[in-house]
Amino acid sequence: MNLTRAVEPWTVEPLERFVRESQARLTLLMTPAGQVLAQHGFTRAVDVMSAAALGAAIMSSSREIAKMLSDASFQSLNHQGAQHGVFLGGFELPRGRMLLLAVYGGDSSVGLVQLFFEELVRELLEASPEPTAKKLVLAKDFERELNESLAALFGR
Amino acid sequence: MTLAFTDALERITRIRGVRGAMLVAGEDGLVVAESLMEGVRGNAVAALAASLAKRLRKASEAAGGGVPRFLHLQAHGGTILAVPAPDGVLVVAVGDRDVNIGLLRLEMRRVAEAVV
Image 1 (cartoon, chains in turn yellow, orange):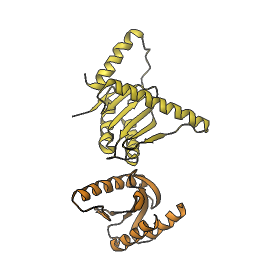
Image 2 (cartoon, rainbow over the protein chains, first blue to last red; image 1 turned 180 degrees about the horizontal axis):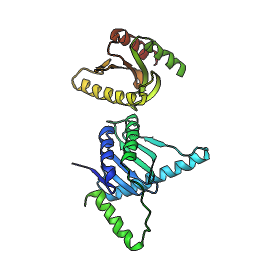
Image 3 (cartoon, each protein chain N blue to C red; image 1 turned 30 degrees about the vertical axis):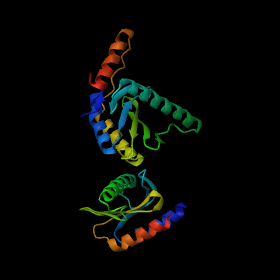
Image 4 (cartoon, each protein chain N blue to C red; image 1 turned 135 degrees about the horizontal axis):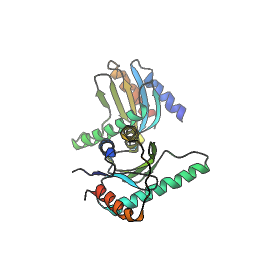
């Protein structure tokens, strides 16, 4: 069963390869604001929204700590638990900064996730389309666009 | 401590045909110390060798063989060897196809005992 879903179709192939190679259980590709471009492994919209919001907040907090240390930004973070690890990595695409959140278990490792994260970034850079002019978000379109994104992320 | 690790790895890299040696955190797949020739991707070898060692350990235990003491992967263009050390550290060596496996294995086991 294919568990990878994307709002942006060009992200699917690189993300599927990342999941296959790194054996990450859950993966989110999103903007620093927490807007999800693609996901793997999540089955409920509420989980995606929570993970995206929390992941974006963690990266945002760490960026502020980096500023205090006179560093531009931390490239990645790893939270290691007893059974699961959470990897958060930031990278630049032509259309702006992106974040990857990956949850992995004992059948993977932070080393594997880091290694294939580097390859994912390379592949996304190759696949990424040129940025288009930003359109205004209108209130009347917002709910429809949100519903379309959720439908794409969960195949409904 | 790092100097001690480097000295230990040099015992391995002194052997003719060895292209690099590393101490790897077995659970994390991260490099603890390395002594590598140019062209050997340390982080990739570390992550993949640790993953391989973890799986082979499961296979060996499932087959009733217990914890593996020595892993040897012979490929067309070279060879990878790994010796699990106490504390979850893995001693990994990358060598040419014609490297002296016996000598390499002996030095790797000495290093595995020394890095505890």
